[in-house]
Image (cartoon, rainbow, N blue to C red; front, top):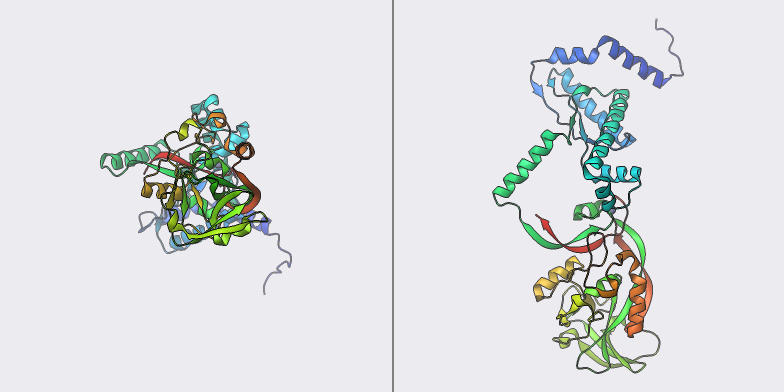
Amino acid sequence: MFPEVPSKVDFPALERRILRWWDETNAFGKLVEKNRGKKRWSFIDGPITANNPMGVHHAWGRTFKDLYHRYKAMQGHEMRYQNGFDGQGLWIEVEVEKELGFSSKRDIEDYGIARFVEKCKERVHKFADIQTQQSIRLGYWMDWDNSYHTMSDENNYTIWLFLKTCHDRGWVYKGRDVLPWCPRCSTAISEHEIVTEGYQELTHPSVTLRFPLLGRDGESLLVWTTTPWTLSSNVAAAVHPDVPYVKVRQDGNYYYLARAATSRLHEGYEVAQELYGAEMEGWTYEGPYDELPAQQSVQHRVVFWDEVSEAEGTGIVHIAPGCGQEDFELGKEHDLPAIAPLDEFGVFREGFAWLSGTNVADSAEPIFEDLRRKGLLYDVEDYTHRYPVCWRCQSELVFRLVDEWY
Ligand SMILES: [Zn+2]
């Protein structure tokens, strides 16, 4: 009654046969024609980034979209069937930079921005074609000759008009803030970008050092940091007013640190005094980089901060408002100056003496050496922590004080 069915099926061959049959019978064209003028059902396809061939995860999403299209078409709707390609953003630029062997934004400027943009567009067109072929092979029914591109002039001018309108109405403003920054891409990275895929478990050398107190001979605050480059821009030391601290004596020096942090000390110390953070109010100290031009006129002092934890570091937090978001907020509260040490490439600016011109990535060792020479270094120790990296190029992020549009 039924014809024989082979037990072994060649699925790819079967698919190709059906694709061919659709093609020969103009099945898609007929469906479009059949539904023309009927009730519209418009699906705006979120554009796929045309930067590489499609992956399986794309096929998964596209299959669902196709399913809805077919379902609605079978119900007799006139469909939009418009696919989109996303040609915007650093994803593509980073790939083209790799292609051309570039390592920084300067290389792009030397190459010529217009030429570089053309290269990026070429890449988008190339992969838009590849993705189109892949989608057709997948059996995805779309009006493939009518795909939209986010990089079209039409779209770009619309975005400019939108921004202009916002500006005209006073909805955008330029503000100063400390933002996570990729020194390689020379761009700010949004919180969202960091939260989604921007952390790695990394080991950095952390340093414990002393800030000699003014008017208290032989006494120092003991502070700890995992970002030695920020010491150049230190302006304050934060303590928690309600946390118990101790003054310990060791090798003829007196150090202040949280009582809970004494395990950080080298062997052999005696507690000379117990006190609360509140008692350190108004204390001033000698900063580790007072000799730098950028540090002139800075009065280093102890400030209170409720976020100080006795469980981390020494319980006395070095504050550099130009180098960290929390520091910047605290700085506003206490009216502290914000010193911004790094340029957009993560290189120390003018005003930082021997550090000027040094890349932040190469600065830790020379800074330790300098602190050692000044007699301020207490300890250097590797520390493993979750640290933000650039999701595009994996470079370690820094925090920069910048003027940005909001
Ligand atoms: Zn980057």
